[in-house]
Image (cartoon, rainbow, N blue to C red; front, side, top):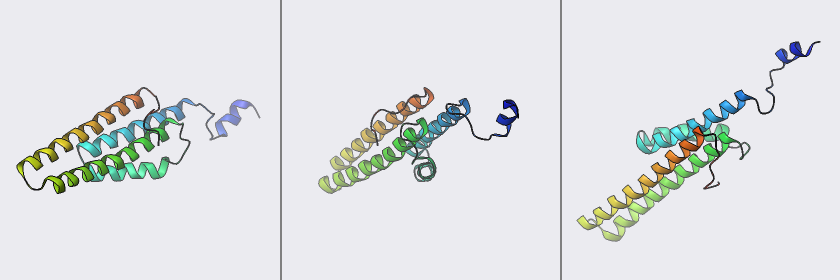
Length: 138
């Protein structure tokens, strides 16, 4: 059987195939998009889509582009939600229901939330450039 006929019947892609690389990049960009959507547009619903991506693709090779970005966005969403919620509640409990207390809660929320949005934009730029996320390495 000629090799051209055999390759047409072989559904497996060769290692380093361009379609595999494009799929990895598309998944990485999708993860970063859902991360930013979770922070900016639809906070609970987008996290469910990010969770689905993590459960489906997040357990693979940590050095692959898609798995790296999916793990980073999932764990940064958990970290961001935890920091925002615990920090705001802690400041409210510490400072009480005073105008000064609310000012600190709003400032803390704005600072932490903006930091995570900027991290998401950097991650999206890395996904478009086909680079793995360097920090944090979950």
